Amino acid sequence: MDIPHSPADLSSSWLTMALRHGHAIGTCAVRGFECTPLEAGKGFYGQIVRLKLTYDRPETDGPGTMIAKFSSSNPEMRRRPNTKASYEREVRFYQKMAKESLLPVPKCYYADFDTKSGWHVLLLENLAPACSGSRTKGCSITQARTAIQYIARFHAHWWENPRLDNLDWLADTPGAPGDAELAQLHEQTWPAFIREVGKPLPDEVIEIGELLGEHMGRIARHLFTNEPTTLLHADYQLENLMFGATGEESFFVVDWQFVKRGRGIWDVAYFLSQNLVPADRQAIEMDLLHDYLRILDDHGVRNYSFDDAMYDYRISLLHRFRALISTIAVMPFTKEQIRMHIDVLLPRTIAAILDHNCRSLLDSGSHMY
Image 1 (cartoon, rainbow, N blue to C red):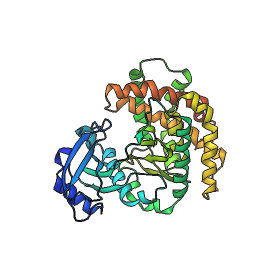
Image 2: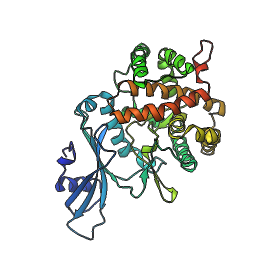
Image 3: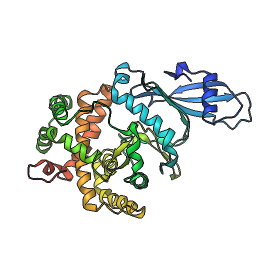
Image 4: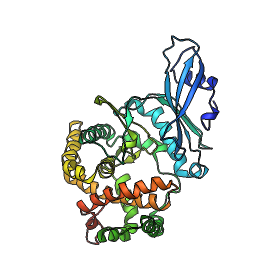
């Protein structure tokens, strides 16, 4: 089947074939459909629409609505090797791993990816009335606890699982930069980041930024190569989590474009440092970290102590800070998106790295990595 490049390429006959291929319908056919762009689907990482379907038989049990995801309409974004790899990761996740994810995910009716062109398409369950959270607004303590408990069970299932070593699509993108390239990249983006932020940062944060480049290769290896590793969602933030009116019973995780191997605490650090206001994080952070480790232990993980977790948590905060530097400095976001990173995510991340004295990890006498 051809892969549609945008919602305009869809047809009733293509949808019929896709849904039959995915065993979502039998012999009935799609007679027509309505297409509504979603606010989240403005074409940066991808195009996202909601489809409302009608069938040639009113008694069909096929999906009445669904979410369709396509590759980005932004040519610059679509040409990036990392973007192409992210499309394949999400398609392969739904094809090969979603059914045993231990995280509630939308049903996938059809998924396809072209390795040469990078075009992809996904037809997914419409989870409404559940709706995604907002990093800008932050989340409640109850929602945070739900998110951490679910990701702990997910990590425990894949903890040191040998299957992860045999999945080529989880590997780093070919040509990924080495230590010297990462250091050079940081030296280039750090001044651009400072200019873009446009306001003073704490002295300790400036020191971290000036030292971070030479450590990035070792930080990445520690978090994403050295054991123990598990399967990471790797974009575990509120826009990718959906909550319903009944709380935990209607919690879902979407957007699996960045799924990868690594230390599970990285997902936890990402979520807690950027999705809660600092006062809420400070109030529940230690309790949630203990909850996370208790769930790992309940599921048979015995080789990961609280000290191990806290060490990795602090390193993960440094890695998240570096990711923010790069995003703010060079990513082709809209001005509104960049301001959200500067005004919301950056202060939260800075508060976390200061609370946990992450600067000391970069001292020459530290035993980091």
